Length: 264
Ligand code: ADP
Ligand code: MG
Image (cartoon, rainbow, N blue to C red; front, side, top):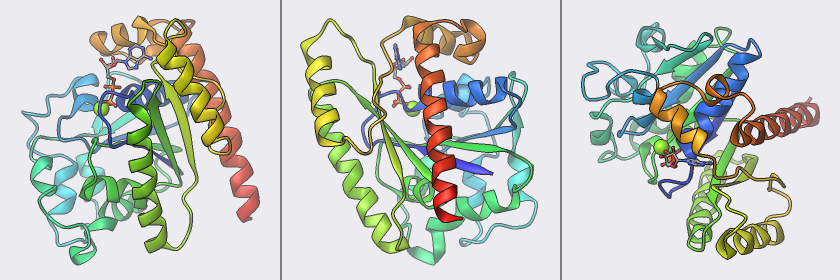
């Protein structure tokens, strides 16, 4: 089971869109996919047709057992989605209260990892969508995944957010004593703007190793898919945005194979 987390401490950079687009493409290929919504706003939960204000059980329930996860709990919290092959571990607004607690307290940082262990064998891929803040959820996402995907909006202020994210990652790496591989994904690219062009240039220059060399363009079809509540590849398989996510997925799969060969 491969576990990827999508994170950036900045909002509106395409985290949820990337999670849903990649999950949809994997499911289209017949993979069994679980998406985990760790954002208290629950945008991905809404995307898949569930109301985060109404849900009485959610990923939050995993955190109510002093850091341990009772047998069968993770399974019990899963919801189906309108997309074949995608299951959802939903968020609810109660998740916001979690952020007031400390991740270090009682093994709180490993709750999601423990929950996913219980789901081994049930899914081929898990993709975790996280909130734009450094807190218990983010720590759990980083601890549970084998690769971090960092969408970065190609805009002037984006690089600050990226630096902050990398700083967080460095701290987490220090405590887990291994470097989590990550991939920077330029998003919302608009070739007509100087901001997009110069940010992309700077990213390629400063993060050559960790960069996916292409980019996700601005594509209103991605927004349409979110309004329609369907994964982008089902709405418009040949939209520019979908083609870009397909290329990104190919890249990530190659990276993850290369990586397991390394550790084998
Ligand atoms: P985040 O999860 O990082 O807050 P979202 O994925 O929710 O960001 O994206 C923020 C907004 O931008 C959403 O309305 C989404 O539909 C839109 N969006 C994301 N990526 C693109 C894109 N490549 N082209 C056009 N709109 C996009
Ligand atoms: Mg989001």
